[in-house]
Amino acid sequence: MDSEYEEELRAQLAILQEEHRDLDDVISKLMTSPPVDFIQLQRLKKRKLFLKDEIQKIESDLIPDIIA
Image (cartoon, rainbow, N blue to C red; front, side, top):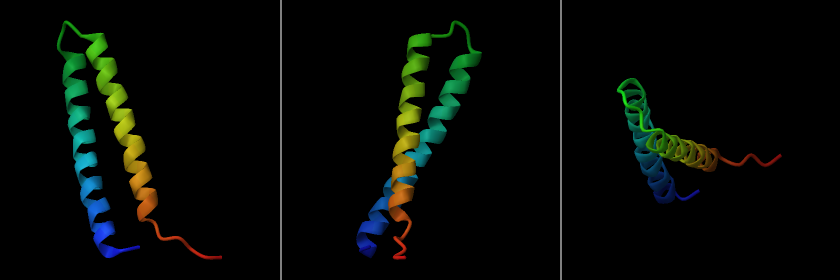
């Protein structure tokens, strides 16, 4: 894997992980402050799940292929 491409993936990974953590905070605050906007909560949870999938995909791309 090209080191420049790997650096780009790692930078993108850091951004996604930060957004995922931020969404965690927003979701927990939203759930504890009435009235709860369930539609917004559902959208945030979907975004968080999307981010989790993207993070896993990038982490998988960063693992070197082992030729057996």
